[in-house]
View 1 (spheres, rainbow, N blue to C red):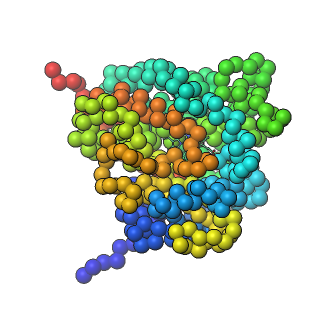
View 2 (cartoon, rainbow, N blue to C red):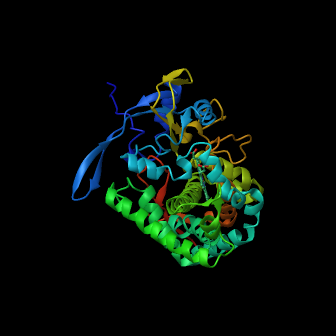
View 3 (cartoon, rainbow, N blue to C red):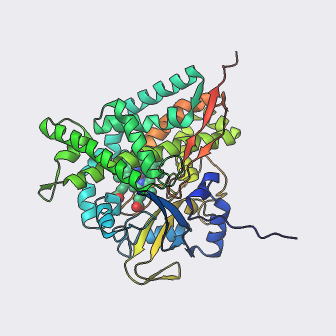
Length: 420
Ligand code: HEM
């Protein structure tokens, strides 16, 4: 007798502790690529007590075609109206605070603020970082291999983006551990080990991070340097400096977006290669595949699984009517497995070409750090892959409970001695 098995809830953060529910996304793409998903009630801690909090529900866009269509119409599917994150802002003040963040803005404010830092992230500017990124990656991998025991997440995947960010922002390298903690607390809000759904702890993290940033901004205004902190603290938009709130928000977005994402791309790539020794051996033999392998890893891992939009008026998407004000969630992680666009979508192909993945989003909010993320991931793969044949797992792989970031918290293992 066949049994009814509950479907995984794609909206629930805990679902992802067991991995991305790819089969469920495949069913959604097949049956209804724009479908309504109710949101689960989640426990939140605030003050002394606990409360249940439940979102409005949303239109889940799971096909490549749907995600592209919505991303190309920012005037219909807004980032600013309710922000770009799945949870609804709790109060008007929260919404107003959220709108200080670039990712939660619409045109024309969005393009004015984004322009401030685009020069720092152009392919040319990023190429200039090549040697320092390579030196960091080399040192990290050599140290891990020498020590034999290592956690790929904390010792390698997290460290490289943090070191690069500290250099770029002009912060002391030892402060990268603060950036790591803040970012875990914010992105890991739903994870029991990190944020634990604690609203006060979440706010306290913002406060601590903002205090830190304001202190550095004051120092840079007094004695400017050639770093991104100085640029943000002193640049003007429309004849005026960023307010403290605007400055802090932009800074924190760069810190979080610049370290979590690339961390999970690197750890997810290592996991994929450990799972597929034939592909790992091929990449070891053919290092020239590294750029296309990185694109495939972006598709395969999709470190940021979704961003949210809000319909600005009654409209439709892929034939599905959508009412003004409704929440629309763009599931990049599903679009990147859409068989209508990718041959053998559930197979890792390191030489996939073309590879029109949506891991960096699309449209006006296309990831500002894409060139930097590619440089970091390619550099780490080049350094690490030759050693991976000697790497074996020594403990469980622990995944982040998040419906936003496809992340691994711990990937412990050992580099065994080289065979003579
Ligand atoms: C594998 C690594 C990365 C992935 C998968 C990723 C993914 C994304 C995605 C999907 C968006 C689109 C947001 C939207 O449409 O609402 C985005 C935006 C953004 N990313 Fe990344 N990102 C990565 C690395 C980075 C890095 C290294 C930085 C900076 C150091 C960065 C900074 C940003 C910023 C500032 C935005 C907002 C752009 C805007 O709203 O105009 N990202 N990223």
